[in-house]
Amino acid sequence: MESTPPPQKSKMEELLEGADQPIVPKVGEVVDAIVISVSSSEVHLDIDGLTTGVVRGREVIDESGIYSNLKLDDQVQATVLDIENENGEMELSFRQAGHQKAWDDLIKLQKEGEVIAVPVTDANKGGLMVLVGRIEGFLPVSQLTVEHYPRVDGGDKSRILELLGQFIGQDLKVKVLDVDEKDSKLIVSEKAAWEEKQQKIISNYKVGDIIEGEITGVVDFGAFIEFGNNLEGLVHISELAWQRIDNPKDYVKVGDKVKAKIISIDRSRISLSIKALLEDPWKKASERYKEGQIVKGKVLKVNPFGVFIELDQEIHGLAHISELSDQRVNDPTDIVKIGASYDFKILTIEPEHHRLGLSMKSAKEGTHKVEKKESAKQESDQEEKSEK
Image (cartoon, rainbow, N blue to C red; front, side, top):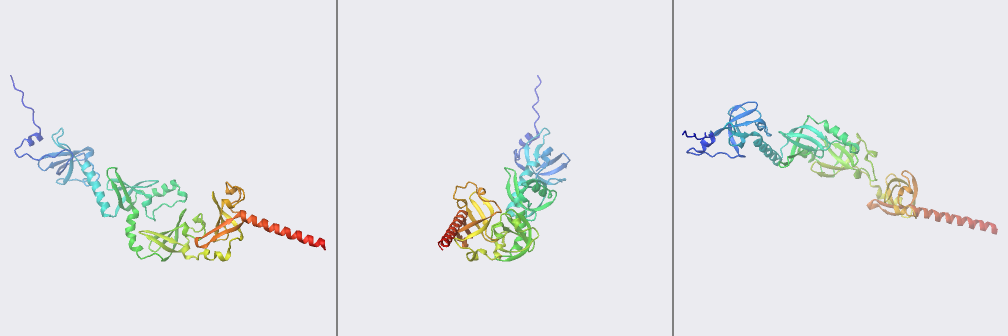
């Protein structure tokens, strides 16, 4: 009876039975290797003289990009996928090793705060998609520089997207803000990179300085002024004028040359005030207006709690809804109309707080009293004439 020959041992089994047993890598470990052949679809490696390995298919492409142009004798690192494949070679991956290195490099960029140039690949309503190496990142609209920030009236999202789309194909200089490999999240900031450059220029200014510049943008919450060496500051709507302003466009427009005072500097954020350079009209309000005085005022705005009244171009007051009529008022527009003028009585005046309280119903009461006195006087005169 013929004996059955023992099964042929694999190369790896032969290595493991050797006298000086080498340390064989485990699946998932990263190994050092040397390139011994390169083709378009696979790369063969020598693993420390222990065995040969192969990187093939999608495992050849790595996110770090460092193995894009390999040649013979290049030293590389690869992740072990299988100790031995169908050809007796160790199955390896550049993709996994490259993925880890790519994210490690991003963490390093974040820690060191290095400014890098990245290409913009796409845009959406929230910001821009960019590539950092081979990893896709996101540049939010809020992290764009003042130069690139899309200023759109009313926040029209389609118009914002149109403006952001102009950056596709361009390179922008950014800093890495947030890296989260687990969630594959990468956030970058153009503003942070710009701030570093601008700090030296901004250091030439201090709070209290008066600047001259040009209005470069008008939005719902204020106006932007460009001044100095490409610096830009924001005049909040409350700092445009002493009087109440509902729409900044009613007060300033793009291209206007203006002066403003620096009231705050927070890193690259510069806050400006135009009204700080104007005399506070409320300081002399008590000279023109007195409590109890009946004045003519124009309705500027209606709110559920009352109406804002313009006494003159600089002084505005408030008539609470309870002061519009002796009867219960549910809607102020049942009593007054925007743009129309009415008589009001000044109830309170507080120049230091820029407040002036008005009453329409008290003004009517005062008018009625005057009419009654006048009527009584006329009756008295008539009685005197009849007696004569």
